[in-house]
Image 1 (cartoon, rainbow, N blue to C red):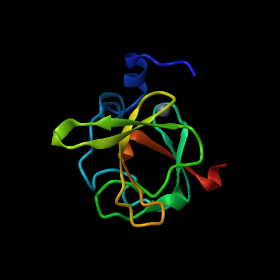
Image 2 (image 1 turned 135 degrees about the horizontal axis):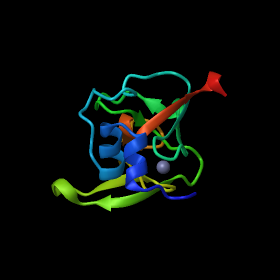
Image 3 (image 1 turned 135 degrees about the vertical axis):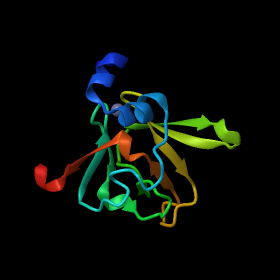
Image 4 (image 1 turned 90 degrees about the vertical axis):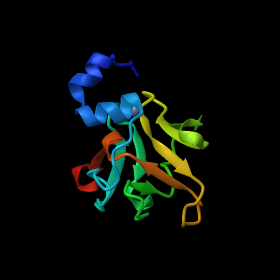
Amino acid sequence: MAKKSDEEYKAELSEMQYWVAREGGTERPFTGIYNAHDKEGVYKCVCCHAELFASGNKFESGCGWPSFADHMDNENLRFLEDASRGMVRTEVRCAGCDAHLGHVFDDGPTETGQRYCINSAALSFADDSDT
Ligand SMILES: [Zn+2]
């Protein structure tokens, strides 16, 4: 997959999407369009449209960001240790384009034990009925 330039991303993304996905920003809780979004479909990387999360794994965590118990069964995520802000967290990025997506925590309420806390601004959504 060809890497895009910063200028190309700036042209395609909103300011918020660019800041989150390309500059590692975090949207304010309860402001993202997919926080209280419960349609069935697939959440994709906003930058390269790699399929990342299925709606069936989304749950209401109350944290203010879209939360998933697991990612899709593919190699589209990569994980980095993030020691910023005085704590060690695991950052989640898109493996294809290196977009910052959010973080994953091991305090999830379901059997996976995981809670992917992902910025709406880093995602696009494909409704099942679109396909
Ligand atoms: Zn991507």
